[in-house]
Amino acid sequence: MKRKKLMKNLLINLVEKNKKYTEEGKLASYIPALLKADKEALGLCVVDIKNNEEYWAGDSDVKFTIQSISKVVSLIIALNDNGRENVFKKVNVEPTGMGFNSIVNLEIRNQDRPYNPMINAGAIVTTSLIFGENEDHKLQRILNFLRRATNNPSIDINKEIYESEKATGDRNRSLAYFMKSSNILEGNVEEVLDLYFKQCSIEATAKDMARFAAVIANDGIAPWSDEILISREVCRIVKTIMVTCGMYDASGEFAVHVGVPAKSGVGGGIIATVPKRYGIGIYGPALDSKGNSIGGIHILKDLSEELELSIF
Ligand code: GLU
Image (cartoon, rainbow, N blue to C red):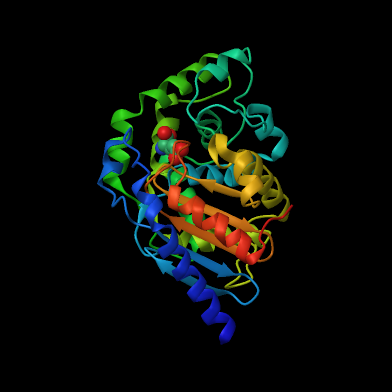
């Protein structure tokens, strides 16, 4: 009982302490509908894997679009469907040191694969590798996977954000057509992009994301049912890529200060996975200059110190 109260109080204090940073951050604006978020929102949820206990504080029930966190989902499904050799023939696993939507990388590598599955080009490729009879079937597979991995059957798309992203997604269109021209991307480019925009527009809360992170942290086993949702091997690969590439080009700094596999999105979400211990979901839409939730990063630094989370 005492332990539960301590944890609950710790989370409440961390939200209060770090809320001030949201003033310094900015909402993502290149997808216009994201500007409707409440810039001061900040909240988190922690799932303790050992006893499947959930702790939360702040805006942990506010829905947001998962954006780049969906890159973890498409990587998991693509690896399951195709096996790792086939996936990594099309997308590499090296950090870029460049922005998440960088175009220059694709040509400099002389028509090579995109650098990794956590940047836009790489994620568009993993999305294109998802099996399905048609685009709707593929989307249903993505949604069903996430519904099981969050233990929330109502997970769905935010249509307004999807429309907004589709209407303004020319940068992603450029990346995709470039990759089609160099035979990295196969199939119908518009259909692949549509699926990619939809997966980015999936809505969830920090609580949902904490459960998803807990499954990954627990080597693919749902702590609430002991069901195997992801293979241990796929989890290992995904966590490794999250450590090296998950926090945009601040991944190295994050590894030093927090030290756990994590992935963020421009909607303000972060998932952090502490192997065998915790799944953490954060929401705070005010972003720092690298595109990570500014309040979220500060909370994770503090939490890592308090609970000694670093895996290194
Ligand atoms: N949907 C966004 C895009 O493709 C995701 C970017 C992100 O969260 O980093 O631009």
